[in-house]
Every structure is written in structure tokens, then in C-alpha cells.
Image (tube, rainbow, N blue to C red; front, side):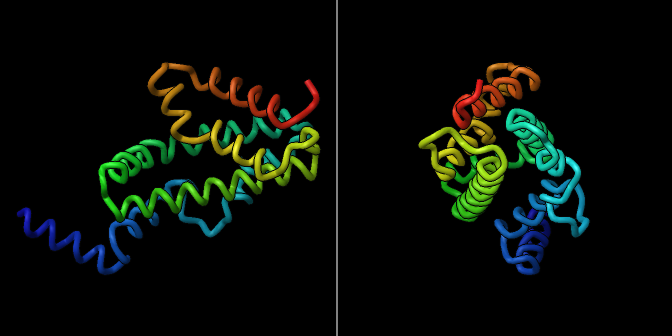
Length: 171
């Protein structure tokens, strides 16, 4: 039976291109919530960010999206990250890919904030994107919500206040 499973996995990997490619396919569909050909930036939860009238409201909408995405892919990312740290090269590549995608998304979001609301004087988009990337990352959620027992409301309020304070001059 074990040989049949291994042969089946090998067949699937050969069809899709390996473990990392298979996991990335599962990740992408799970992240979007379906397999519809709608870019994630055009989905209703992301449009709420675009429609926000203040920087704080945009950050709150971004934090709300973070919660949705965590519930969809948080456990998958956690397992993949742990396996990558344990030496799985295929999963290390997967983790690096999704981390790069998350950094790109943070940069795009901050560029939007900068264009629409302006950033604190002297703060570059790249530096602000790193702040967003760090504070809204799955490892931060894991540490505060999962391990420390923060509620999602508490985490979201904190991340909105922390990022707002770090990115904008206004109080």
C-alpha cells in the first residue's frame, strides 16, 4: 500500500512539476478562496481597501483581508515553513516564493497609501512596505494570535494602530 501511495505521489508530482509546484497550486487556489480567474486585487475584500476614505480605514481593511487570508492559508504556511526550516529544499523554495509575493503585495499596498494619503516625511515606500510586511506577516499572527492568545479583534486593532503610527504623521 505504501508503494502505491509513493507511486501515486510521484505520478502527481510528475504531472504538476514536483512537491513545491503542487503546494503552490493548492496555496494559490486556497488563498483566493476559489478557482475563479479573478485577480485577487479585484476581489471584494481587496476593493474595500481601495474604497477607504482615510489611511486608517485602508489599514483596517488591509488587516481584515489579513484575517481572511490567515484563516485560508495560515496552517498550510505554518507547516510548509516548519518543513522548510527542517531542511526540505522543495518547501524552502515554496516559502521563499510566497514570502516574495507577500513582500510585493505589501509594496503595492504601501505605494497605494503613499499615492493616496502620503507617508510620514522621510519614510520611503520600501521602508514602509517592510514595516507592513513584518507587522502583518503570518509569523506575527502566529506569535500573537495563536501562541499568545490575542483575539483577532485585538490583533487587528493593534496592527492598524502600529502601522498607522509608523507610516503617517497624523494621530
